[in-house]
Length: 607
Image 1: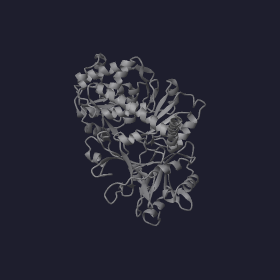
Image 2 (image 1 turned 135 degrees about the vertical axis):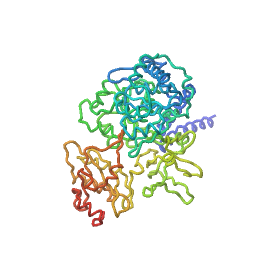
Image 3 (image 1 turned 45 degrees about the horizontal axis):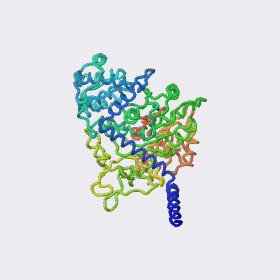
Image 4 (image 1 turned 90 degrees about the vertical axis):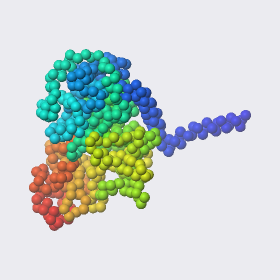
């Protein structure tokens, strides 16, 4: 009897030690398990919804039925309920179907900024089974024509604020009815539900929309986004613990995947209220959050730094925001934001519109873009592989396979292309589609998606962004990560922003470092402080040889810095009118002159 009792005690003691042992080996094990269970629950719920409707429309209609009078969109002082959004989108869908004669499978281009009409039209298109082509409302001329032609849009719907620009293109390309006529018909149309047979063509693997990658150079590429992918992206909020009583502040452009798929569709999936704004405004951000009791905000690119750069106020912590979801926040900004604006959970994530792999920093580790999870590893295989930045290609072994990097080392992120993690590529752009694929990566015949991003995963599984391919340059036989140089430059008291890139120098291999800077208001460039900073923090080969002072840095519509034009302009004072400085070995940064430029290009000065 006592022997059996002692055996039971030993077993229980052993079971009690197991969690402690797991915790010692991985202090984040319980976070990992919690996230895995949450992911399983979300995916199970999504699968159930997909059986009823293979489109994000199903999530919206479910919420209309559950709480029809709940505010859905709040815009410029007017509140629109879920029921009102449903009825208005019914009117638009009916007009598109009967007067514009669109049908399931047709592509309709949306050319408008953030406003309720964008939401109503996107819902209407889903109700008649159309593919939405989300055009960047800032593009014009050649880029606009390119986007319209590559998606074969049957109809172009433009908002009033961009109508004049579209009017010429629209009427030159196709006979159609003007916006004024359609607007009148929409108001007169019935708001009753349309027949589901109109969208009988929709399948999970079928195209839901085309979203154009902003890029930093060249014409936009139309990424094909399936209905399944939209629904997967909409789970981001649920995975991050967004609750049904939350209020989202959405100012990111709806033509972009972060704004539409993660923001708007995520709101419909969770059934929350969206405070929609036309554009981001630093001065109105916190006022809007207080006015509407916002609890969740989205961010991208440099937005968080813009908020931190404003003058401090006694009301900085007077808000109800509890969570910020997005990507692209710098480490220094992350810490400053939390210290200034309070205990806000920052949920940094990583992914691409067309990509098949992503990460979520569900723990909140400062600086990390994500966290590895055992469940993700099992379902969506990926790897970090060695990459030669000079040859701009993956390093392969004697058998011709790529080489995985060990923990703590930087490598190129690639995601295996499978039926579960697809890469559908770009519409009418086979060359760019194939360029994003790597074959025979780890075994013969496998195909992986090339993310174009250099990442690092530490021994605890946290994922850190290092650089974009093309952003990293090689100088004096060493790889230079532009993000590292940027992080050190912005520590200088006079520097507001920094955009670091490499420029070609005649007679030299690789590219030498150059940085375009903007200065803080009322500040002059402190060449001495800048030199001391790079000298103390960076190795010789990583120190920017040239500094260019600009009034404002060029960014894309999603606040990503543009480098290609700067790289092409180089460091010639005859071409560049901005003030420039040259790193002289003994004196630090001195004004750049034509004589210095000539001496470098003619070989009299060796860098």
